[in-house]
Length: 315
Ligand SMILES: [Zn+2]
Image (cartoon, rainbow, N blue to C red):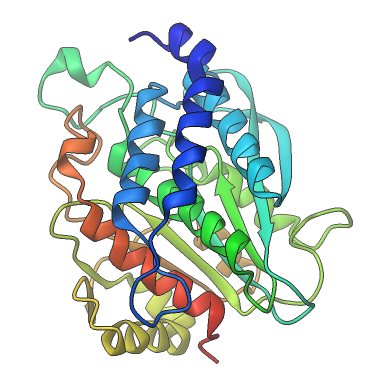
């Protein structure tokens, strides 16, 4: 199906997806259970919108979907847009970070983030025809967003006793190799101005930011991301201790790779921030990054941990 048809259908699709939210199961003795199947449906819905590269119909449709989703849950939504000179010869585009605010009270906030844009090209695909096409972005993009959207449903039904801010970053994945400044454009903009008057992040310093990126892969493996460990190590270790208590097998407390991701600009601003990312993904930046290589069980492990941390702070 082409993107134009999907953009006309999205309100219908949104109604279908949102209506399913009423059947989120409650399991075990966790405050509210996170359903991997529900998150997987939200991942697939994003892919049905088409590639979400900045400036595309799918990108605009997903922005509208996130807003309608927040509205349907009665949660506060903010769209923070700015003009950005894009890497390469892509010109100036309008990028928008999206923010959903959950929780109650004025305690120390928790920020949870994921990028919703997808890469303009499958540049690591060995097939030159596919390499010129935009990334489907099931794992690299949709997985983190799916986790955050399902958390919004859970937090709307059972509000955490402190502010929890869900941040959907734009412009993470349009970068060029060898130039760090061409990546993480939305988070860089947001981090530099997080405490400006009018920002939904402004106020007291948060407990920290947890970024989730590429967390949907089958057989998810999450060793420590090294920038997180080096700058926010105590908090990261506390997060992994919590995961071990919950018997979540994807979280492996051993050194992994150093990744420049949406947490980095916040670390540069003195905000504690960690990145949960599985960089050992064979389909990374290829046309094979589709829902079939993702697994509800992976999304569920990550979502359960983040929900638990929202209700029971690590510190
Ligand atoms: Zn990427």
